[in-house]
Every structure is written in C-alpha cells, then in structure tokens.
Length: 213
Length: 426
Image (cartoon, rainbow over all chains, first blue to last red; front, side, top):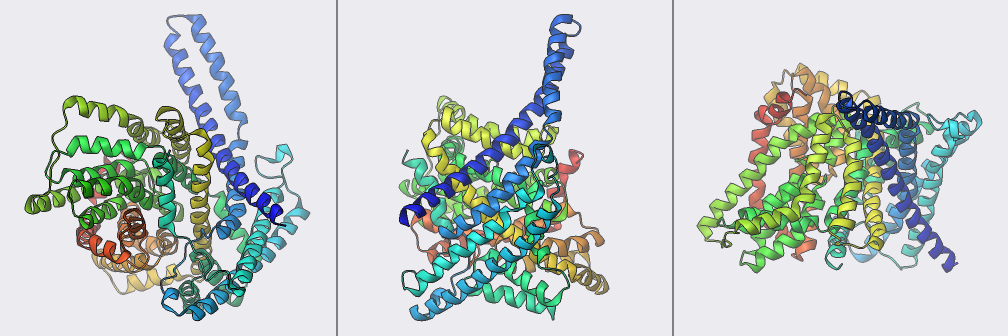
C-alpha cells in the first residue's frame, strides 16, 4: 500500500512537470516558427536585387516554415488542453502538500480541541465541494461522451471534447480522496489543521535552492 | 436574499479555514443550487472554461520565468548591478535594493516573488553594512509590491481577462507609475539616510560598473524581449510569457550555470504548484462573479451610483476605500475578478478610462499585499528575515504612507498612467 502511494506521488509530480513543460515548449516553438518566416522573407527581399538565387532560396525556406505554422493550428488548442489538465490534475497535488492558501489567523486563536473541531467542519465543507463538483462534472462529461464531438483543432487527431474535459471529474475525484485522507488524520489526532499553505516558506524554498547550488 | 447569503457563506467558510478557492467556489455553487434555475452541470463547465481563456495562459508562463530567474542567480546579479550603480549615494544599499526590486519587477509578474528574490539577498547585505534590520525589511517589503505594477504583471493579466481590455496597453500604462513609485521611494530613503547618517559605499569604478552590467545583461535583455516583443506586435502577451519562460530557463542552465539541469524539474514543479493554486482561485472567483452577474448586481449598483449622482472623483474615492478594505482580507486576483465586473461598467458610464481604472486597482492590490491580516509580502519578508510578523508589519507601516499618497496621485492624475500608452498610440 505504501509503495503504491509512493509511486503515485512520484507519478503525480512527474506528470505535473511534464504538463507545464510541454505547454511552454509547444507555445514557444509555435512563436519562434511564426516569427521565423517573416524574418526569412525580409532576408529574401533584401537579396532580391543583389542575387536572384539567394533570394529564391530564402523564399523557399520561408514558404516551408509558413506552411508548418499554418498547419500548426493545433498548437493553441493543445496548449489549452494541457493547461486544463495541469490545473485540474494538479489540484489534488495542491491539497496533498497543503498548497492552497487560506486564512487561519482566526482559527489559531481558538484552543486546541476547538481548533480540531473547526478543522473537521472545514474539512467536511471541502469534501462537500469536491463531491458536488465531481458529480456535476461527471454529468457534464457523460453528456459530452454521448455527443462524441471532436475537439476544436484537435479533432483531426481523433481527440474528442470529452477527452479533454474528462480531467475535471477525475481531478475533483482525486481532491475528494485527498481530503478524506486529511479527515481521517485529523480524527486520529495525527494532524491539527487542513495543512494550509505557508506561502512565505515556499518563496524561501526557491531562493534556498538558488543559494545552495 | 441571494446576495447576503452568498457573501455570508463566503466569509463564514473563509474564517473557519476553508481554502480561499474552495470558499469562493462553494459559496457560489450553493447559491446557484438554492436560488437559481441553472443546473449544477453549468458549474463544472464554468470552472473548466477558465482553462480555455487565452489571456490567462500567460500566468503559468510568467510564473515559470520568475522561478527560473530567482533560482538561476539572475536576482543576485541584478542586485550587484543596482549597487554598483547607486551604492555610492548615502543610503546607497537601500536605494540599490529599490532599484533591484524595480529591475526584477520588470522581469517577473509577481510581487511576493520579487520580495523573496531581492529580500533574501539584499536585506542581509544591508544589515551587514550597518543598516537597522527593520529599515531594510520595510523597504524591500514595500518596493517588492512594484512586482505587480511594473510589467509584466500577473494581476494585470487577470484584470485584462476580467474586463476584456488589452494586456499590452495595461502593461504600458504600468511603466510610468511603477518608475515613479520607485523614484519616490528612493528619494524618501535618501532623505532618511542623510538625517540618520546611514552609510554609503565607495563609488564603483567604471570598470567595476561595466563588469556588473555585463553580468546582469542577460537578465536585463529579457525586459527588452517582453516589452519590445509585445509593443512591436511580434508576440501576444501570452506568447511573450512563453518566450520569457524558455529564455530564463536557458539563461539559468547554460549561461549563468547557477543551477544544474537535474534541478530544473524541481523549479518547474514549484512554479506549476503556484500556477495551479492561483488558477484554482481564479476559476472559483469567476464562478463567484458569475453568480453576481446573473443576479444583475453590476447593473443594480451602476444604476444606484448614477442615481445618487456621484461625481467621478467621489466614485474613485469609494472605489479606493472598498479596494483597500478588500485588499486587507483577500487574495488580489480574486478581488479583481469579483470587483472589476462591478466597477468597470460604472467607470465607463462616468467617463473613466478602463485602463486607468485597472492601474488604480493594481496600486490598491499592492497596498493590500502589505496590510495585515492577509498581506503576502509581509509573510514573505518575515520568512526571509526570520523577523516576527508583528515586527515586519511595524517596519512596513511608515512606507505604507508613501504608497497611500502615491495611490491618491495615481487616482486623480490619470495622465501618469495614460500618458505612455496614449503617446504610443495604443
């Protein structure tokens, strides 16, 4: 069980890194190609009076890149799909590491047992939220599955709308499981609060890795 | 009935420690279920739509660029460069810290990130040279807020998405106010430094200055790529953000070599976490704002304001007060998404430029970042210096007055923000 959990946790992190890296690179490559052909055309124009051959060459290469860019209508759609997956898949990871910011200044004024009680209530509300949206998004996706419409600009690769949206119920399902874990830990006295993020400590982490190179 | 329930639910949930994003989402969802004919299915669709917002795509890219900048040693070189430029003035290290914040703000779109990057190095440096710690901490906490005023800015991207204004124009409108605030802070520091006789550094030789500039140039070049690229029309802001992310990763890994390639996934994961958190808040704030819109709240408030015959200056005063109070309790992006749809139509009716309103909101959010109880910059400074939070709040307070004065200036002199974009014909 523990090994399984460890593997899942590693996969979760790896997949998140992959999604963000992929969407960044796809957009980057598209931008570069998109500007490259303009540059090539202006070079070609520059040579048009001096050397027919060189000019011709740059026009051909420019055309080549223009063709690629024009066929890359999918890049924007793919980036958005990856973004959706990053957000909704990453939510549960955020819960696991206590990454979602909240206000705990008031709760901390209460006594320990009261704090525990408040945490249980807060956890139940979060579970309610995750449960509600799991159900709502599942209904939505089942409708999309029946409709089976191809996704904009990605349909040509056989990607259906529900393939992209499916991450929403999956994501909320995963959050539900993570909050269930937290609830169990609070009831067993293994944890006091919801593990809300300490943004300051995160900011520190970044600079620390920078200095400890 | 609906609206009091919506806000009561929100505050009740927030104060028992439910994460901000879930509080927004749950309050919005329950209100829709109880009071509106919309199906629950529409909730899921509303949340999903956030990811399809092209403008918002810039956020993960800018955060990624910022992470690589901080980890990759760009911040350290910018501080060295700033100190070589202004260190010889009385109070030079403090003035240098403000300059470093301005430079870093021009590369990163987040304010806490600016405080973390500059503060972790500059505050210790000032204390070593004999500055009082509270003085050093107060300056960086305040100057760090420039992160969201000087472009690029995540908060401006959110405002643009909420009101469908141009990100590029907003960025340009932030340049002059950001620069001005930096200068005002520097002058204030200089006056205090002369009075308190704070130390000055020996003047850097031309050779030293050139050396520092040469090392910092790779970071400074990014500023040109982002703003130049957007202005010349080569990139959309989202594309510029993606280029910035790849560029800063390249600089960190292959030019400065301050980090190993094996460390890169950790940096990507860290900024992915920030993006996910922020996007979760944004998605739920949009859901919350959606409830307000379906209840026709913006229209009702607009009608009320127009009926009351408020002059533009009175309206702006009210806007500032509301935003300052909200800023003390809420996360900036959520405030913008909830309040911009309400304020925007009124401003248009009263003849206030939406871009000007955007800059006013951003400056308010800056102040919100340094006012307790929810002031992220305060937490970050407390963490990088090890000072107790209460001490940081006290240290930041005197400088807050400067920011408030600056807010009045930006609010009532529109040409400060609108001048540059008008000149550029945007």
